[in-house]
Amino acid sequence: MPVLDSFIAGLPKAELHVHHVGSASPRIVAELAARHPDSPVPTNPESLADFFTFRDFAHFVEVYLSVVDLIRDAEDVRLLTYEVARDMARQNIRYAELTVTPYSSTRRGIPDTAFVEAIEDARKSAESELGVVLRWCFDIPGEAGLEAAEETARIACDLRPEGLVSFGLGGPETGVPRPQFKPYFDRAIAAGLHSVPHAGETTGPQTIWDALVELRAERIGHGTSATRDPKLLAHLAEHRIPLEVCPTSNLATRAVADLEQHPVKEMVAAGVLVTINSDDPPMFGTDLNTEYGVAARLLELDAQGVAALAKNAVDASFLDPAGKAALRAEIDTYTAAWRG
Image (cartoon, rainbow, N blue to C red; front, side, top):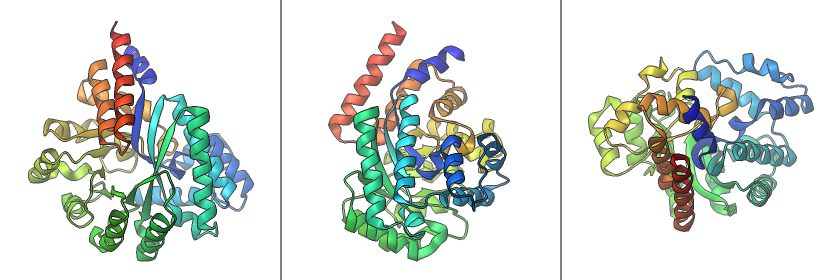
C-alpha cells in the first residue's frame, strides 16, 4: 500500500482522540526526564521503546503516569503542548481536540491559572506559526476519584480557556463506574461544554450505556465493546453518536487480542460514524498517518474511502461550521488533485 500511504501522508486531517502528555515524543520525554533526574523514565530516546512496551492496561496507566510526573512547571506544559502541535503539523493534521488533564498538573503544584495560560499560549503560537488549530477537552482522570472530578470541573467552568470545547473522562474503566461523575458532567454541560467520556474500551457495553445515559455523551472514546450489543450499535448509528476508534492503542493495551479482530469493521457495517485516532501515539509507536493506514487495510478502503473517513472526523468535531466547511473542502480538493 505504498501509494495509499503517500496519499494519507498528504491528506489534510482532523484528530479527535489524542492525549496531551501521551503525545510527548521520545525526544521531548527524554529532555524532560533529563531535567527531572529523580524520575524512573529513561533519558535515552532509544530506551523509551522498551519502557513503552506494556504488559496490560494497568501497566500502561502506570507508565503513563510516570511521564505525567515529568510535567512539573508551566514551561514544561508550554513546551510539551507546542511540540505536540509541531508533530501534528508534520502529519498534515489541521485541527485537533487535545485531551488535557489539568488535575495531573495542579496536584503536582502547577497553579491552575499558570497551567491554562501555558496551554493557551502554545495554542495561539501553534495556530499562527504551524497552521494547526488546537482545541481542548479537559478530562477527569477516573482513577483519582471525585476529588479530581471536582477540580477538573472547577477549572473548566471557572477559568474556561478560550480553546476549551469539551469535558471528558479517562483512565482505567474497571472499578471506575461512569455514573458517579454525573454531577460534574452536568456542570460542564450547563457551562456549554460537550460531553466526550471514554467508555467500553476495557469494559463491556454497559459502560457505554452509562456514558450515554448518565453523562450525556455526544461522542464515545474508544467504544471497543459496542459490537457486543446489537441494540447499542443500532442506537449509536441512529443517533449519529461517533466512536473515536484507536486501533493500535487497543492492541497495545490488550483491549483487543489481535488487530485483525478489531471490531471497527463491525462498527462501520452497522452504520456507526467512526473516526480514526492515535490516542497516545509515541507511547504506542504510531501516529495518525499510521492509524489511517491500519484502518484502510482493515476496512479495505481506497483513497476515496480514506478521504471519507477523514471527513468523518471533521463532521464529528466541535469545530465551528465555517471551519468544518473549509476543512472538508480542503480534503476534497486534495483528493481530486490526487485522482487527477
